[in-house]
Length: 433
Image (cartoon, rainbow, N blue to C red; front, side, top):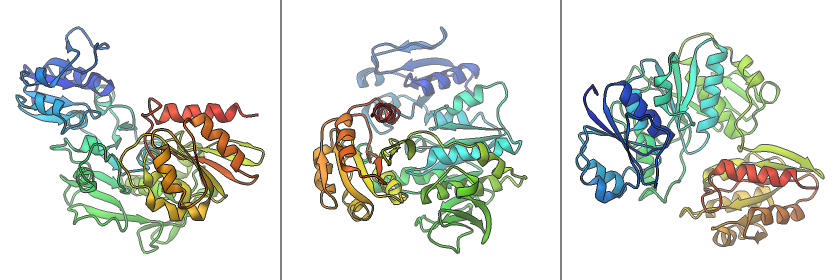
């Protein structure tokens, strides 16, 4: 879409909104930014700023293009009001992708997206192929497009929110890591959440590649399919959680050649390797893994005290992530879980909890209801705060065990995000005597 002389409205004044506004200005558009916040800052003088946006205001706003930031509900009343007189509605990712000419590797899944996004970038850059991790990863795609030297490849993490608003988006390689119920506070059903994620394959054809977890039950895909698995050795990529094999041949030993552990990380590694292989270039992946350190808050070892390991898995904001963290443990576990009420059913974790855990401690908004569920599997203590949860867990954890902080839901009842929550847990643990 040629934007010269067009009226572009950006909905959302966060980092994605600022990048989208700058890109629209570069392309010759007249740009206005609306946000529900009482004040807006961080934009150049050419951008018209409209704080305190409401649905009433949105009903009268006319635009050639409406660009919606990913944190705003696409189907909510605010977007619907601004859409009324918009010529076209897209998200920031779709908008920016239209101005990128390189190779797109896009990653989605309920869990593991960020780690896989980082691994892809690490492998390609180590192999002399310029790559930037971006999207839901933290750096908006519009920022990458605006850079003086754009990378040959983007490793693009895509959430369901970003995929809701795609139109022409066509990645050369699309990764489907896994799927489990999440964001039920935004979606009417699990199926509507799944359909949003499935849009990642919508515009792919036989020239493209889909890297998928075997047994995911996906519909027929137009792209060439490459499968990975930790359960079915017949998959093109297979791992038992220690050895990674391609067509039955060992290519990587996780314990000797990486600092990543567990079946969930084996899946992340295989998906990343499969994606990078599609570039048909020599890959220095073993060199990349020598220096790669996984992102924090993902089964991060904080410290060992009195023979007890303390793991920070604050990034576990849903049941599937909690299950993955539990399943990967080799020591008896005292689980700390809890946070915001998201309407999820936690009963499926009970059998796994019985296998892996000695006890559980729940905290936060969901403490009492979650405690009621987990108590069907192990003895469970219900507390109010994270500090109380740490104190309770420490009393329950014998030498040789692991205190696993894997909340299983989002943090917004008490914290600004999972990073704030994880940093708080880390601080509490490092202060223990």
